[in-house]
Length: 329
Image (cartoon, rainbow, N blue to C red; front, top):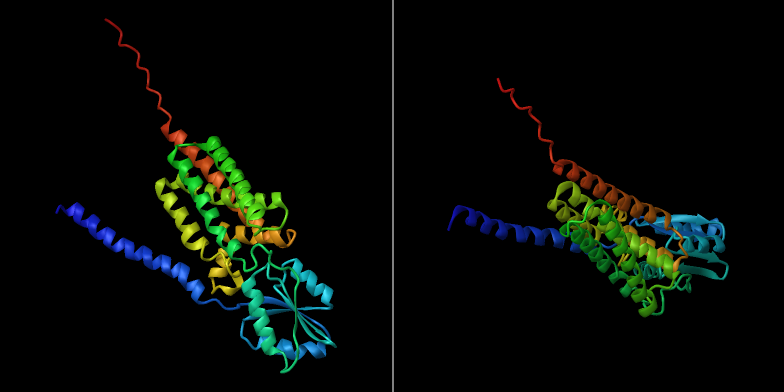
């Protein structure tokens, strides 16, 4: 066997296990370490009544981030604005737990178990779901499964634009058009057919489109700057890191550090958070995620235009110097 063929054979044998190890680590590690980490939860009621519960919650080192509110209405508003995932209201009639299963069914169940365990023995606990998950997707399964197709759509658009040789304005137009249509199709399926989304139809379509555009523009921009290796780098960033670190199936605050925080700075995680906000919370808490998506989309398109300009400059023919004929003597 020639030396070159031997090296290629061993490269494949080594590369595949490495890819498997990276993929399993990226996907299995966050799932195996799910636990509350600075999970924001509200607390309202007289200080003398809430102090013992607050102390018991803070005894779980780094698990909960307690926000105090002056009234039950203020705590409910904080849930609707996505400042906290839930709140405990201490009243003379007994404690009441406010949850928002639309924010995360996993977190809602976790809070129910944690707060019930911290309540005095024999104390009845009233639970109110302030923002319930939609009837068409009560466990959030369809919502959690919706992210990966968006990532694939974005990756596919960036790859196709690069392979088809589209450049600059044409490439940007193709990416924007594909993202807009993907957003419309995704909303038609998730909202109109499955009932997994219940917010403003066009706001949901806009978030889906911006997510696909941010991913596709990033891949196309990296390819314009780095060549075909840029496609691999972009796909690795979005699929191997962005998808498992997004926290869409649970919550970013349930993932181990730094996965949860890192995921929200990438388009998949930001897109999932923005979609949840417009679908169930009337847009509450969308500012940060939309900013992240906008920055990635703008940076990708800028890199795409810059790379196309560089390629055009390097491929321009150099003028041939004109030499005057020698005089005939």
